[in-house]
Amino acid sequence: MRLAIAGAAVCLMVALVGIGGAAVLDIPPLDMPPVAERNVVKLGEPAPNFQLPDLNGHLVALSDLHGKVVLLNFWATWCGPCRVEMPTMEQLYRTFSRKDFEILAVSTDAQGVSVTRPFQQENDLTFPILHDAYYRWGLTYGARSLAMTFMVDRQGVVRHQIFGARDWGVSEAQQLVQMLMKS
Image 1: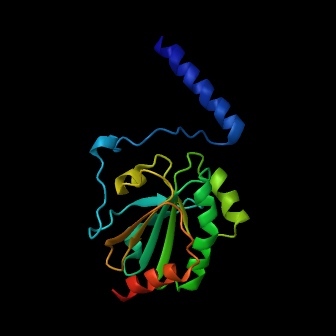
Image 2: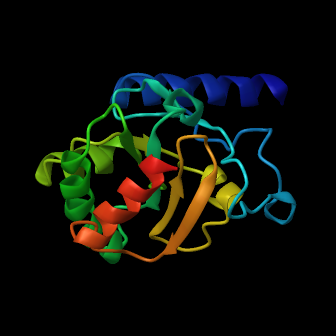
Image 3: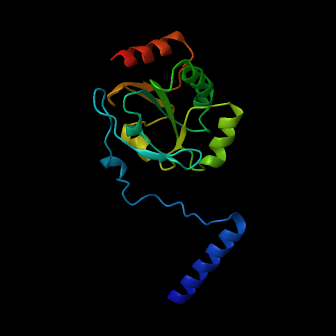
């Protein structure tokens, strides 16, 4: 019986390699706590650090951006309001220097790059798009719906939590970033 199962697994892997290159099993990480045990970030607390892959597979850590104001946005390509707000996030991104400000758009799309790269190219988005296919970090932050944005100050503290999509191209959004840069 074990030999038959092992043989079937090998055949499946060979078939997957023949279809699309390498076989990648999409299994949630073992260290992922049950939903009930996950924390929710509170305003005034340090932002939990994470490390997620970008569109090119490079790992990006929130802690690498210490000293910058960070707009941390949880979104998905299937989320209509998210799709609408992304071009305005790009407007905001182009307003400020990378020395002082960064956007991390964390996609929760299970399909990863295959859906986010075309969306990024269609909308000429230049800010980093990261992938959290299991919504691990979205839930850690307490993002129970999309779009959800957290504004993190230069010291790495969560200062604002914004539910739903926004027009990030308006002057109020620029003022919010400038205010966080001064703190």
